Every structure is written in C-alpha cells, then in structure tokens.
Length: 149
Length: 149
DNA sequence: GTATAATAGTTTAATATTAAATTAAATAAT
DNA sequence: ATTATTTAATTTAATATTAAACTATTATAC
Image (cartoon, rainbow over all chains, first blue to last red; front, side):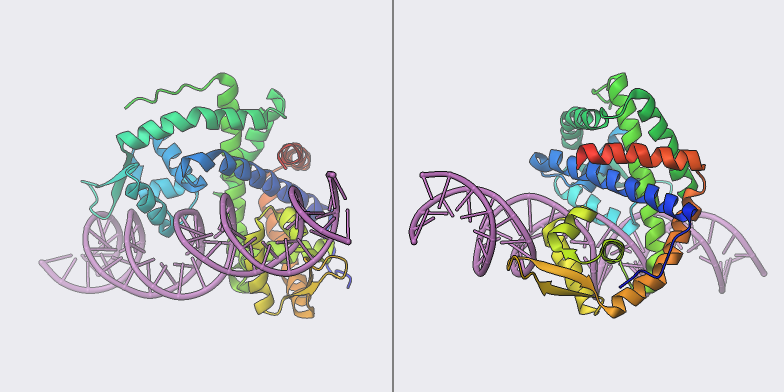
C-alpha cells in the first residue's frame, strides 16, 4: 500500500527536525528516569521539586506553567509529593482559591542531595556536543519554545 | 532557604540547554495534542500510526524502539488501536513470540487524512526558525539522540 | 540432545496525563 | 449592590507510562 501523501521539501525539513527533536528529548527523559530509579521519584515529581528548588515557592498554576503540565496532573503530582512529606501547600493569603507550594525540610534535603548527580548526568550526556553546539541548541530551542508557549 | 548546590559553568550550560530542549519538545507536544483533538487519537496512538505509515509493518519491539516507549506501554496503545480497527496484529511466521503490526484499510485512510494537517502544523510552528536553523537543530538533536539511544 | 539464558509480549500495580465538568473565589460589568 | 464572567484547584473517566514479574518461545552453551 503506497502512501498517497507526499510532503513538500519545506514540510519534510520541518517534520525531520521535529522528529529528531522529539527523539532527543525522549532519549534524555529515559536517561533521567533511569537516574532517578533509586530515589523513588518519578520524572514529573523531580520536575516539581526542581522548579521549587530553583525558583522558590509558587502557586500550582505557576508550577504547571513552568513544567508545562495540566492543572489536573499538577494536583496529583503535588498530592503524591505532599503524601511523602516533600512539599507543603499553604493557602494563599491574597487569593483564597490558590495554594502556594513550597519544599519542606525533607524535600529540600532530598533535592539538595539528588541534584548534583542529576547535573552530572545531564552534563555527561550533553558532553557529546561542543560548547558552541550546546549554546546553539539552547538558542534554537528557546526560540522554538517561546514561539509555541 | 539558600540552595547549597552551585553548579559549575559547564554544568550550568548543559542544564540550561537541557531545560530548553525539554520545554521546546513539551511545547510542540502540547500543540500536536491540540491538533489531534478532533480525531480521538492520543499523541502516542498517532505516533504508532505514523511509524507504521512511514516505515510499514513491523514488530511491537521495533515500534517501541522507534517511538522510545516500553513494551508494556506499546501493548496497551496497540490494544486500543486494534480495538478501534486501525491496526492489526499478525503472528510472525519466523518467531512465534512476536507479532507484526500493520495498518488496516481504515487505519491507512485515517492517517492519510490526518497527516497532511499534522505536517502543516509542524511546518508552521517550526517556521519561526530559518531553513539553516532547522537543519542545524536537526543535526544537533540527531547527534544528541544517537549518543543517548 | 539437554540445560540454561535471553527474548517478545502480557499482566500487574502505581503513577502520570489529558479534557471536561465541577466548586469556590475573584474580577468585571451593570 | 448585584449579576455575569473568569479563574485556581479538584474530581472524573479514559488512556499513557513505567518497572517488575510472568509465560511461551528462541538462542546459546555444553
């Protein structure tokens, strides 16, 4: 059965870049998942802890925007982190609909402990690219990410 | 509470590139998800159909390797596509452990119908990058993806 | 030829993820 | 001051996703 659809040169180039972007991202995610195996954290749980670690306390809405997940998912991931005593929710004093999420002492200790190894893993994997290439990859992805989000 | 961990310049650069890569990939995924809303397909279901469309029939192991998903997940995604009559499993004649997965006529018609719009969406979103930039992004991501997978 | 190891896919349990509907609260319009 | 609209988070239902254990089959070692 022959494919009826024939993409233009422009479409082929975009599709090719898109596929490679997704594969690269998926490959890194698999690697990060592997690195977290001993901690009992999932990739998304780590993402939330990392966001709170690097930026400080923020609302669930802001956490969701930062790691690009839906509000329903953020509720559940934070539920599980709260259950483990790694984060806490505090009702916002200025908007009683909202919660401010922050790291507990345990959460802070865990991410402080895990993050250096995470940084080493990412650094090792991206070491396949030269400094110039890493800077260029960051620039291109930022340009792409800004246009879409 | 001050973060105790201070990344090196090299680690900062790698982490920065990694975060931007993940954000770009996540942004595109959200966009693809939005585009598929009317079809009733999920992003992973579309990914399986797309792989079969572009490459032809293959084993579940090969599908999983192509879209970087676990064997348990592939089983479930293909179960759901089979349930909708879009793919079929045929036991391999050379290895009775394995199935060969292929598109049905309905599956072929659906992906033939959807793919042009998918190509247009991807082309529009990546249009924020110049031709040279798209080629470079593809090259960098391929280099990264190969090293990890 | 037999025993052992590896493999393809399934199942299980737990968590992730989405869209849509819902509730409570804040904001905007009148 | 009241009503309508928007928003933050939760809940629901469906599907996705992983690691690990399992079964049936194939490949390898002896």
